[in-house]
Image (cartoon, one colour):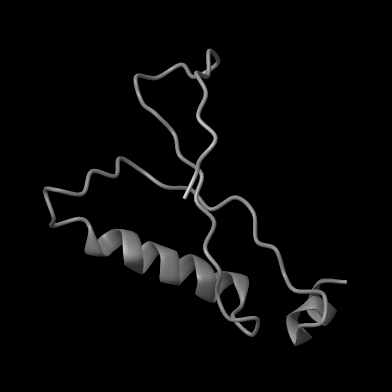
Length: 73
């Protein structure tokens, strides 16, 4: 597994950022996907070995032949 790593001189806080892509079933709505990710992050809340300061949902790509695609057009 490889990852593109760079120094971002535009970050104004003393934090590092990582972008992660999750694949979910094609019939999962954006709201369901966001809740799934929120639930996953919440599992880490009581684990001191997992340090996540925050997370943000930003992009949801929908498979062009999914029934959900018709609801977006």
